[in-house]
Length: 152
Image (cartoon, rainbow, N blue to C red; front, side):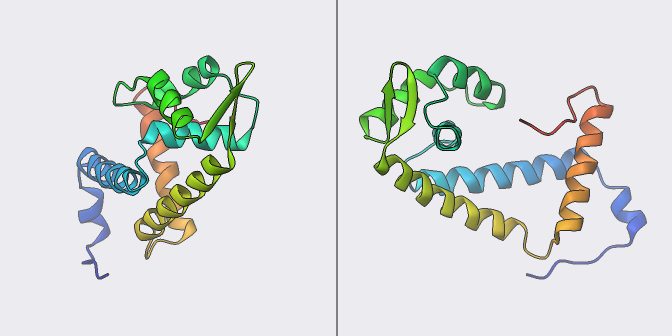
């Protein structure tokens, strides 16, 4: 990929809102498209990754409370849990959620698809530049009254 070079002063004069929105739109769209290949939404993905990281730890209400602030689609979380259960990807024992082997296999396929999108996004951007970008965005968020801390 070739990208045109500009002087620092010209780049510094660019509107951050435009570039942040454009980057977010394309990044989220790419991830959602990759997940859709597994018939998953972002909330499906969030649920799968949290349960995989702590099997038997999460219950529907506590996990939904953790994930809801990140949801921009007014997701009906009970329907997502039910969908994963109907697929045979998720089991619930005494209220605790665990992935089945089929669910873990699906999660790994989705992880691979997401990793491809992330790799495409990061082409030509080393870890130092990427970290500096994230840190700059964190500061912008905090300066505007938002929470600049990394998500849990």
